[in-house]
Length: 429
Image 1 (cartoon, rainbow, N blue to C red):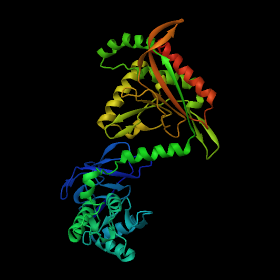
Image 2: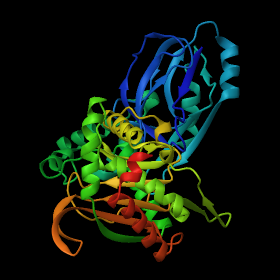
Image 3: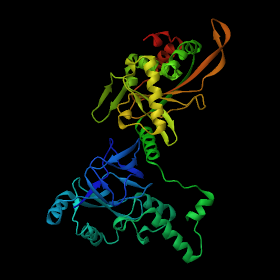
Image 4: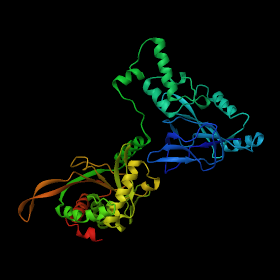
């Protein structure tokens, strides 16, 4: 029998993923647990294992294409089941649903197979596909990338001949159709790839970039952003860091200012619970969290990710420094797991190492606040009524003003700055 394995939901609320690399090919034998494909989701790159043993009879989608959760991923030929038994399996495990894409200007059909869907070895699912065509008439099968590309190029996707599985239209089909149309008319539209390549570099949105965009809009729409800016003189913190830096370096740990900032924030959150909370508007409740999981915004080649340091209040400066180093390396190497992103209660974003003193950070909704760390610089400061040169750290704090009042925002910032100005208590814990 032929077993259809659908793209599974490998994360919380996952909707789609992009095929990064096929690890198998048609005709290859696989065992249950063997890796089939590498998929990029909104947060991680994950390798998907095979649920069954058998022979790969079809791969659905090309590298670089996006597929939705529930779409067919691979087809596996499993020995020992055939004929009527296979037909009974497909009847009880397979569902077909027509989906109209709003605003796309075309109508397509999305095939959704159940978890145990199989196709008879003799028909290979052709009868079901033909049934879809008969009932939907002008509705066609196409990948999300092909639909978006056709829309951008002004191509009527209903006129494109599909060469993918079951006649599915792919991005290559759209490009080929556009090229053929150009040759036949002898003109070049401003929307054709040839014209675009001269003036515009076109690149499909990655899953990560789609999610970043969605989360930024969600935060702006659902939270009342308010920001506060201040400076703290950290010459003493710099002295303490240098004192312990060499010792930690011998242990393979890089001691940065960020480790102290994370510790100071966790201390301050314990004194100002509103900034470690969440508003549940559906049930008219406030959720004050008594655990302190600090998210750190990490800049990677593919986009911004926010892995979490769990129970930061229970960690020493040394342990926090090691955690920062570990998750930063994993983030840049694309090795973070879904667990690294769960249950954050407060976020810190540090842009100062790249440049910039102040910013208006966007809250990692539904959290209540985010702290931005600017570029440290030497400035003239007043100490004991005397003019001196000091190290100044700019801070930018954005809060959800529905949750946190202005006075509490200032008190929280003062608490954080107090710990950073006098860091001895941080290093001794």
